[in-house]
Length: 300
Image (cartoon, rainbow, N blue to C red; front, side, top):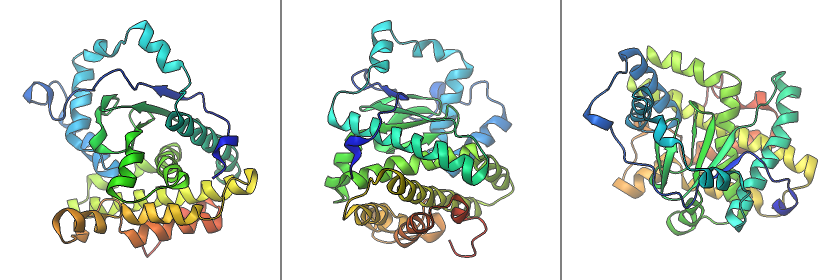
């Protein structure tokens, strides 16, 4: 991928070197001052985004108790966050994000009539705080709808090679583009609608809705890839294969088979390897946001 020619985004917060972001679970051992309605909503967001609901509730509880004062980092740290990354992985992430901004700022209005407000990308190492609670490297990259930011521990790129045997700059770009896809869903109001549907759904049905959300994000990553290549001639031979290898490696079926020896489809929250590859290619072949409506499709 010819990412070196991309514009670097200014919407990057580099928090690497600031230390961890706290633990999981419920601070103080309970639900604090949160109402039951708030807890239910946070649980639904967790099912949709794949984030542990306990982390969302913990983060909201801290905010309710006024602990946000602890997030007031010192001026030097604030300045570091505004300084563009100088290492290769940081520069790569900033340039991929910049390209997604350049693509979606044109594609989204043209195809949906919606303006594209950029998301922010938080780079961290080990752990940090997010609007959804503690962000930890073990969680992998995620989009937090509560603060409209993407969280990425850049060591995940190394983990892709070591744990999943997936390498290549476009495979890494696909990961970022997938999370940006969740932001596009948020802008279009899709995440909110899914949350409403899940309130009246069983756990299995909620999982199925979550799968559709994730597959749509894969498809939107494909839409970005197609439009980026059309506009910037950004792709090189083998790039699409890299993305498909990444999508296959992180399918729910393969992850479950690797961890427990068998797959349980009713517990899938992101989709099988076949589904993730197919929907990425659906977006890539069409280049159209409307082609990514996994909720109207009879086949996931």
